[in-house]
Image (cartoon, rainbow, N blue to C red; front, top):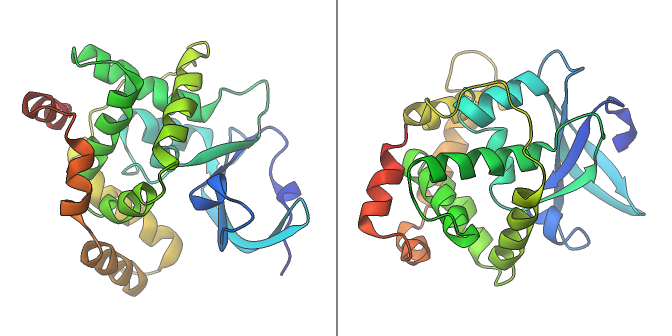
Length: 240
């Protein structure tokens, strides 16, 4: 089945995320997230998509704006949607009437770090955000390790975040974080909603979770957090 990106709501923002956001031509699969106030529920569509004559397999997540805001500010869905902006991402379609959801995510994280009186340099912010995700969701280690294998990935993300932080503050209508402690459970329950049916956790969810834990490389990513002093780490872990 061939599916173009023209089947998304007109009033929506569309982003590439993952390896395809960095190297579209060499990426095996391409994943996108579409966020719109017009969507009633979240769904995932799989198929082939055309990007400037490049035909790629991939998924497109269609996410209601309200669900994203809940996930961005309170991790109601375990970061399943919000954390798609934690590593590599690129805007494909930006509707002027909507907020920039990638900017909203990083500005929300910045406000949380600043409120805790932690350093607010962009590099510290990026590593601190990754540390918090990994602290509450150890399966994130697999994605983080693969991400750090590219020498250009981190500098590119720092530049992107600096740009997003320079944008006008995006309007939000939800309080800041209060659900970090349940991130792991909520993340995999959301995964189950797309990949399985019946009781949680389903077969595909258990298999993916087991694989993610088996391929976690905490020793290899630990050096990445060296710039976070012990007291910084303790503070980040307490921001629930």
